[in-house]
Image (cartoon, rainbow, N blue to C red):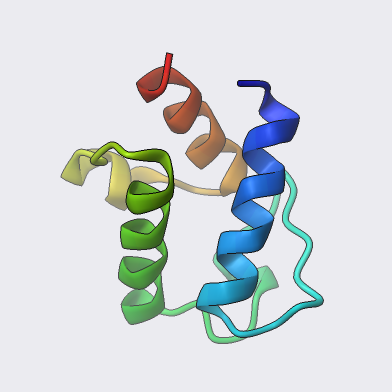
Length: 80
């Protein structure tokens, strides 16, 4: 799976979790860029990503992710 494919799938997840078809995420997207991305929605997002990509984040990964790019890096590492 390529980085672009992961981002494409993440865009769909973000749109679903935040109920906003206009969301376009990129590597530098952070919680400050998306309205409603608070701690509760972060957990919903993490669960949706885990389900979509069929793996579990480690707690340290969940709390240390600074942007979508780091999420993509973890997904690519876990799904190889």
